[in-house]
Length: 422
Image (cartoon, rainbow, N blue to C red):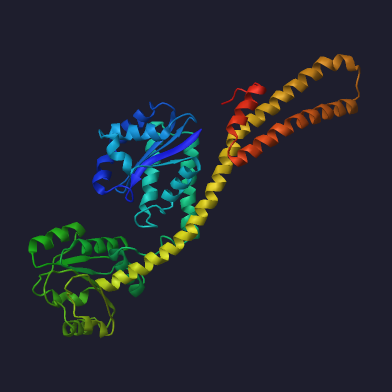
């Protein structure tokens, strides 16, 4: 049996190619059904995300998986195979196992350590299980990939640090407030990055999210996203002391919060800490406001530096994660080899035991009356003979498996001893 993976990702194909090959959740059952009819394919799974499309299969040894899967992928998406071929990668056997483990552990992701890919892989697995297209060899590799991902998360800190500006803002807020539960947030402006930061804050437990914007329509639209309230843009500073976190992303060409204004705000707050995130260019908040007690002000460059430090940290953790993956690949290969060899070894032992038992029964009348001790001795003698006969081919089979060249020897052994298991 052979494991193979064919696909493309963000490193091999631009978005205009990836979107042409993407498979929707609705189309997945039909695609998995069609994969069953690819000659030589016995199991299959399809993983489709915004950054990758991959087909993983278990197939017969004789199957040319690279050509079969590339052709299938092109035909299923109504594309010319020559057009997608330059963007495809193909992994088999050990390399395919390693690739799947790295994908599950988020070592092959655009952002190393991001957690979404594991959930997407589990969804792909569930879809394959539901369709009946995965149930044996491939199943064992995929489920092991989940365990590898868990081990990487447990034994390294690859997913612990923020690697996006919006999430870095949340991590800094945690450091200031400890818990974000119940904190009040104000969005000044309605930019995409401030929306993302607000979503992270909301998930982290923030309470009310208020919005102010020069455009009442945009303020209303943003407020609806968070079921928040709208503050009048012309006098929002009058309520600023109620806020714990302020995210400023207004397009104003001048400071909309000055040091003097923030001094009054902090007096009204009795110097309770306040976190200001200025992600506007040009900046919305006068930098000297950070000199006030209790004011924690970060601009876009500050956040980028946090992100870069965290990316460097994740790369260090990724090195440790790669060692875990390498270890798990070797364990998986050993399991699969044992799984492949076991039926033949058991079959050989049963075949020889059958011969021994038959001959013992045939000769029993010639032995006369044997004492229990003689019976036991004869039984032990004949079993030892059969074990010695079996030892050499079994030892050679295991040696061949260690070199990865055992398939021909395995087939020969089955033919010689009339072992019919596949």
